[in-house]
Amino acid sequence: MFEGKSIVLGVTGSISAYKAVDIASKLTQGGAVVEVIMTEAAAEFVAPLSFQSITHRPVHTAMFAPVTDFDIEHVALAERADVLVIAPATANTIARLAVGLADDLFSCTVLSTRAPVIIAPAMDVGMYQNSVTRENLERLRSRGHIIVGPAYGRLASGLEGMGRLVEVGEILAAIHQVLGRGGDLAGRRLVISAGGTQEPIDPVRYIGNYSSGKMGYALAEAARNRGGEVTLITAPAAIPPPLGVEVIQVQTATQMRQAVIEKAAGADALIMAAAVADYRPEVAAEKKIKRRPGRLSIELTRTPDILGEVSGGLIKVGFAAESEEIVENATRKLRDKGLDFIVANDITSADSGFAVDTNRVIIIDRNGKVDRLPLMLKSEVADKILDRVAGLLAGK
Ligand code: CTP
Image 1 (cartoon, helix red, strand yellow):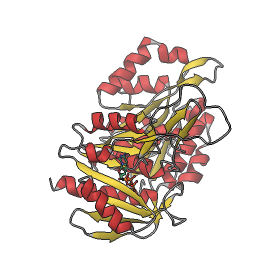
Image 2 (tube, helix red, strand yellow):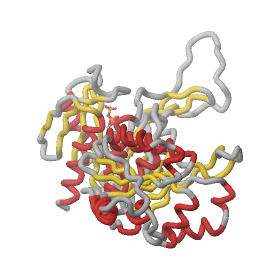
Image 3 (cartoon, rainbow, N blue to C red):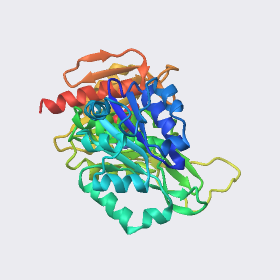
């Protein structure tokens, strides 16, 4: 995911510095070359060796002149970086960066880089609330730096408030977004639906389906990583939604329709990965339905066909979960709903479809071209789908 990227991770002296080890680890696992620069204070909290062991690179801790090629080092680091991440960034660090100090390797590197800078503040609540810190952060933001957090929660001082370093996932999402700026979906607005709708029968029961949301969430994440501006409209799902995208939670097909229609206006593409109920109970009982002798019938009525209804020149992509005559059924849906292409899968196969991390799909386009893809991770399928979306958008 970070293959071929050079990421400079600046770690400063906060109790949360240990979390930066996890950031370095995730970035390295993702294929990035991670250069860690620690301030003197940071090295009091976490041993440089921790970072070195994870990144397999020397950690830059040099403060002043003793390193003869100091100038070259900070310039080289700054030049090489695709993105510079400061996590955690203390109030002191933020103040130093705001005024442009350059009195150690870390501050020299930040000052001389032309790469985007992401700053994840971490400090005690009082320091964060102080107007001088707020002004400093505002200054950095107005210079184009990206400020992530801080989060609310329990702080090292024992107080509760704003000042915690955000979750590692949020920092990684910000890095993805920054690196995706030059991606093939940069500047494109994508609406992606996911999850399985729930149609209430009474206050405690609903008609649902086995959708886990994994395919739609993988699409939203991949689109984000390619620079897309993503709105994820999600019915209940088994996993948390990705960060760095707009998330709209819905429950029923009717709610999903309303959200999709609203968000599709002005969007470049709509990808409906949600498993939308085709029928809903005509009335949802206001009180819990009690057990009584004899049979119980629930009258069902059709839900609106969301994908069929949306129009307006945007790219439309549908999914077809089929158990028989896959290509025929999917092609019919493609035509009926006026799609650019449809992604069909065989739900009877154990390694494909609901709840699993893999999918074997067949992509059929509006010219009837059938492309059978091998078994892949859903994240890989997502990129294959987005390759086509990006291609169609580029050709428009
Ligand atoms: N879909 C939709 N609105 C609905 C039902 C489905 O927008 N009310 C979308 C799905 O998100 C999917 C595509 O249409 O992208 C096909 O879904 P599917 O349920 O397979 O299609 P149906 O036309 O309902 O066909 P079937 O009879 O097989 O259920």
